[in-house]
Image 1 (cartoon, protein in one colour):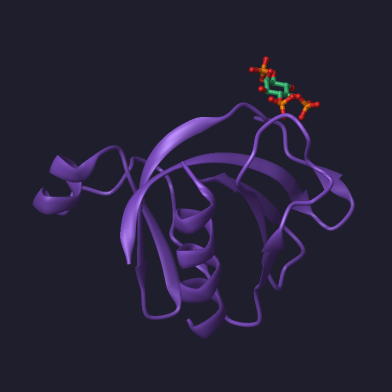
Image 2 (cartoon, protein in one colour; image 1 turned 90 degrees about the horizontal axis):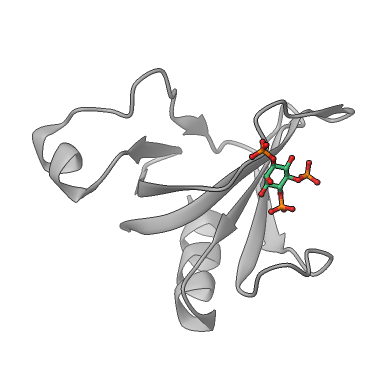
Length: 106
Ligand code: I3P
């Protein structure tokens, strides 16, 4: 599973707000137990990772619709085992559900 999603870092750890809180677009690639980020489909094809961005480890991660987030639709939250949390913005309901399913079986 891969494609463009909006992404926002919400929590750096369970009780620590992320410092960079702005939304940005990433080409996201779900592979095995990792979610990797690329600037765009081209850099993904070339295998050039988005600079400085480690893939997120999905072991024991949880994801769900971000029902409390009202500023955009089709937003889901991914909470990692270390307590950090990321919001992702899909283009529609179907895309969001596809990612939620994919992440849940990762
Ligand atoms: C952030 C940016 C985000 C906003 C975030 C701001 O500022 O405006 O869009 O999140 O609000 O801190 P900056 O670009 O200067 O880092 P929302 O779009 O979700 O409001 P927040 O700190 O309340 O998360």
